[in-house]
Amino acid sequence: MTPFDLVLTTRGVRFLGRHFPCTIGKGGILTEKREGDGATPRGVHTITGLLYRADRLAAPAPWARPIGKDDLWSDASGDAAYNQHVRAPYTPSHESLRRADPLYDMILLMDWNWPNAQPNKGSAIFLHTWRRCGFPTEGCIAFRRDHMHFIASHAAPGTRVIVG
Image (cartoon, rainbow, N blue to C red; front, top):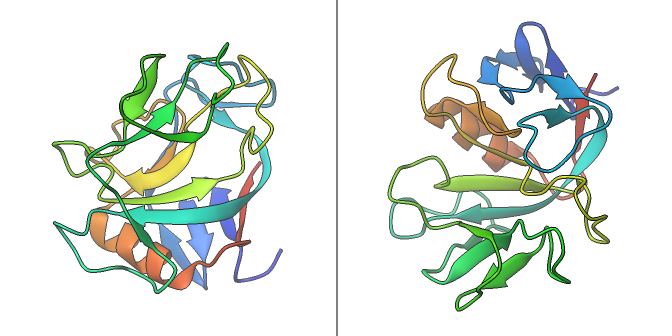
């Protein structure tokens, strides 16, 4: 491990010598993750992308891409686009990346079950802003808004996320 890794600990996520309180999936941490189990997947993952709401904030890093009104994420296990960024119109099951609440104002994408997704192994495992302290996610790792901004502005593609 290096200071440049995001490491999930009992105190939160350690990154660049700092600890950031976070919330994880309501299903805890699982090695055998399944779609809909609400768990955060155990393992060493990497950051693959950074999306942000350009109508709400400035780009947190030069490599960030804005979230458009038609941007979605497929969670349709039987579809060829499962666990992929898709655009509306898209009729299979999906999650909108452009939410009314601020949870997805910044999203660090991880390589969990990506790019060659295995059916039912889980989708849309992101780092994003939390709803509130202690409120679990559906499997993502979530942070206070200012902490998420710090992480997003200092992480880069390939940054490791270590969930033990």
